[in-house]
Length: 192
Image: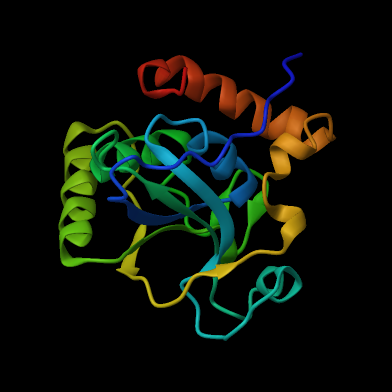
């Protein structure tokens, strides 16, 4: 059993950072994966994509806010590109299941990319087209692409959840295997 270390917020030397907001099921899983990447400065769990202001976990879980569980990734584009982040995103969740990831179901668990610029939108559309053309998945992608309106940071106990609760059963049975698979496949992009 591996004891995971919490990621450290890494400062960019160039102060030239960008933000990506992605949702693909439980934000605990995505945060655990993306926080390990070289070039990622900070990852926060939160809510976005809906229409109700100031959501909290209970409200989002009700399915009535329209928000998805998402992560906000602050990254240094000189070290890792938005396109690479998207390829990793599509590899670590199932973008073909509508409003579901494993046992988690509901619109809050949908696959979603919230872009913050026309360039991010174009990159997302291109990556999706490339994945569909490559027939990696037998079913079509159902990932929603929409402009980022507002990101609401999740409650403090959600931040770094996997690293703070490594031995919790959900972390051991769901997140740990996902992180192990990710680490093997994307070893060249990891912080060393």
